[in-house]
Structures are given as C-alpha cells and as structure tokens.
Length: 484
Image (cartoon, rainbow, N blue to C red; front, top):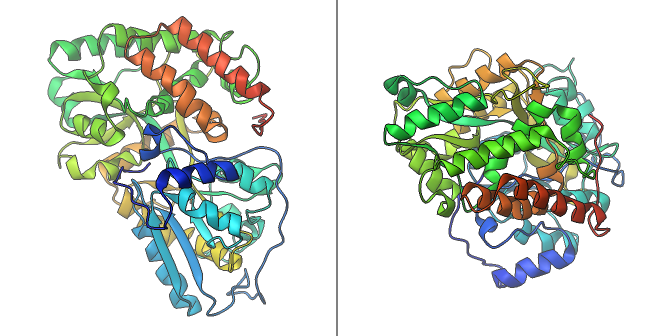
C-alpha cells in the first residue's frame, strides 16, 4: 500500500548488492525490479514456527506484559500509503507510560534494511512488515525469529480490563496471523478491496454502479461513448488487478474451489468454470478497449491520479487508496467502493465482499524488548488509537466497532457500509500472502498481457496453472494449507 519514492541506500551497501544479500539469506521476498517500488501483501498462514515464551519482567494489572520501565524500544514502520504518524502517536503514549526512549524509523525498504539485522541477531523490537520490500515472515517464523503473540491476545484490553485483547479484534485477525498453531503476526489494518469509483461522476452522468459482470460490460460501453475510459489499473504492478480478479473467482465458484487454488492443488485453475468466466470477462474488457490507453505503463500512483482526475471511472484497489490518493482527489469527488459483481450460478450471494486483515506487524523474538513491542501493539489496539488511525489514514483497523459514532471520510464511510452490508459473506484469500513471487510476478505478468490484449483467457488459465504447478513441485518453497 505504499507510495513510490526515490530510494537511496545510506548503509554503505549498493542497493543491488543488498537485494542479492537479502535473497541469499532467504529473509526477503524479492520481486522483479519493477515491483520493488509498489505495494505488496505480507506473508501469513501455514505450518508452525518455533514457540517462544512470553518475555518481560514482573507483571501487574497495569503492566500485564511485564514491560521493564525505562527500557528503550525500537520501532521500524513501513511508510507507504498509510504513512507512519499513527504509529508515532502510539509510540508517544508508550514513551510517556514507561519513561522510555522510542527509536522510530519510517521506511519503504523494510526487508533490505532489516535482513542484515535479523541475520546479525540485533533486529528492532516491533516491525510493520509491509511494502514490496517486505521480509519473508514465513521463513522468519520457521526460524523462530518471530515472537509468539499469544500473551498479547490474552492481555486485558486498554479500554476494558474485563475484556481480553483477542475479544476486541476481528476473529479473522487471529486466523490470518497464525503460522501453524502459533499466532505471531498481527494484521493491524482491515482492508476493504473492491472496485472504486466517484459518486459524483456516476451521479452527474446518470450511471448506476453495476450489480453483475454483464451489467459492467454494458455500462463500460456507455462510458466509452461518453469519451471517458471505463477502467484504469497499475499496469507496472498488475497484481493490483488480482485484488478484484481473485476475489471475483471465489465469489462465483465458492470458497471451497478457491481454497483448492490457495492450496496449489492440481487443475484448481483449469477445472473451474468460475475461473473461465472471470478471465473471459477481463479478456472482453481488453478486447473492447475498456481500459484507459497507456494503463499498462502506469504505476499505482499514476493510475490513481488518472482516476481521481476523471480520466477513468473505475479502478481496482484497497481502502488505503483514499489516503494515498488524497493529494489529487477533488473535495467533491465522493470516493466510494462497490462489492463484487454477480456472475453465473454464484456460490456466494450479491453483496459479497473481499475484506480481510492487512498491514502485518511482527515482534522480533530476539529483539532487546519484545515485551515492549507487544505493549506498543496493545496500545495501538485501543479505541483511542484505532480511531486515530481511521482519522489520519482513512482506513479501518482490526478493532471491532472502533469507528462507531465517528464522522467518516467518504471512502471510509463507503467501505464501512459495504462491509456491514456483506455480513458474513466475506472473502479472505491467501495465495498472494503465501506465494507473492508467484502471484505478483508470474501470474501478474500474465495478467498484464491479458489486459493489454496480448493473451487469450484460455492461455492465461493454462499458463497460470502451469506456474502454480511449478511452485507446488518446488521443494525449496515452503508450502501452506488451509481448510477454511
């Protein structure tokens, strides 16, 4: 969810050398050169890591995790689309409570900067492990480098000591943050994925947000006649399209079929009617030239800017987009997000939404102050800081009902509305989390060709299955499984 920036390395290592060193150590997921500037999802799920005991000193009612007073804390925060001020605000409360110095680093190069430190045994205490240059959490967990956060889940919440932290956060947060039986990743944000648009533009033109794939195609025809591009996307990072495309397959085919894809099962792509329907839909959009000309050469920021300037009506994205695109968004834009479209014989009902925990926070088990790292997360999970996050970055957190009674920004209000309307019909996917090199590079490359009209749907499906089969057979890649 990160905005791009010019990257400079001030640690004495050339950037290419540092990337190669990171890859050799196996601690960083290394995308292609183009992907290094954009947002990527973190890791999650799978078979278990080594359990680490809860650290800290004497515990009390007011200090349930046993934070040592005055012990310094180091926080390393991904500074992308969400910025890092919300984390600084929580750190200020931590510093005031424990009389401790907090060293804060905001960066878009989490993996390259921290790989040498993990290898050297001196990692920072708490890390927001997001962005394209993120650390490989699956390997870190397997190596016992991640602190078991069960003590955090069982600690009393900041707002109501009668409630444990685990009772204040969305249950999917706990499910997604496990490696085997160990909960060692806290996904702090709660992202709503979907098709984003301007309420004002649709209202001015008399267009209604379509309910189905076929209605979308028909509306695209009207939009094109009006001299506007129906869609744009981040062509340099086409995995952004997967935020919608993958979830659309799950809605039509059902979660059982999608879980087979997450689990890299043979013929999971090639035997699915839902895959065929969705990929053929995108092939049709491309054939009818319903994408903004030149989209294949745009970064996520450039595509968002084209969209906020009214050059395209729809864009696939996550709810961080409101904050990230704020500099170019007109005051009356009316940013909104729609749920997934209906297809043929859908297994999940109208209004189904992809909504899941995001923004992975980890605590280093070999850091100097893991108890302090967990306490910072407990502070962030308070209603005060969940609301601060919503205000500052226009996004939800995993804290349930934290925004109740707040006046929300247009995009966040829309995201909250579709989330409430979806009820239990929520889709959470793991393929991009578990195998980002597969989805973002290999399948992403195929998707880029599909949207540029250079690849037919049948070839996309066949080649995607082949890429997944390669990963399934590759013993060097740690595999993960889900049952629900």
